[in-house]
Length: 418
Image (tube, rainbow, N blue to C red):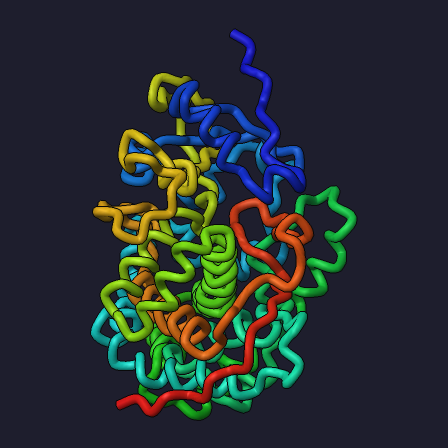
């Protein structure tokens, strides 16, 4: 039987608002053949129940070695040799390797640890807003805050020393957004990877010479003790640097865009300054409403199998739409409404199953601090350009904006916090 024609998942209109397409696909069934910008065809899982089941399905492996030649020929993945050197991290591992590697990072991202760091995160956020330019109109909030705050917070969590943190280039965070082999930007992407690899090598050398009680030092020590291969060590540091920073940057921007488009919710958060319970609920609803993790990374079946009523060939890529699942009316009544009082069931913004984001608690605290501080200290925060002029990133798997031009009234000084 011939395969159905793939549904295109790309283009400016799609990235600006993918939800009408997800609604159409979800209503037609749980699994759909789709095509990504690189030309690779994949199977997209939509719907909350189907997504949860797929994310817990032990038949679906994450290791890229399971991908077939059709996928490998066009997929937006790293070229060699970087693919073998930087892509054997948690997101691309299956048990038992995944279990062994995940155990090494869990303590650093534990909820209690994130809460302990909240006051320090608040200091970082306030310091960044203290540096905002005097002319508020047209300030790029990504460059001034959203791209800087998550990286500074991450550096605190993993133990990245200031001498190295100061050298990190923001564009290295885009290494998590690979382009296909025929993309005209492929050479630039490879150069980006080369620079990032050199930075990772410097981190390893620094922590080997000056170990401390921090996550990076523990990972370097694990390599020295034979618990990690060299490629696994570099890959885990790569994942920490980019997957631990860029998605939070994007989630700050998606949350702000959602609030700008829903002024009643924005006004309520402003009026509720200091209401930590309201802010925590708002963050959960904003994560559900528009997640920076739009789609999961690739999964593969080792042999032809049925997936929610659809026959999927072995080695074809299977992608789960977290955003489509989080707008499923069968799970969330009136899902296209941003409701800060929603009786919040478990959304899938951080995934589900064994690959549930280990840094979810950290991201929640960062988002609460970031949004709370922005709304507290920047009265009248608003878009400085028409909504339709905001450009959404063309990344295959993620959502966010690279630039967010805003205006605001005279900033408030930081409040004493204790």
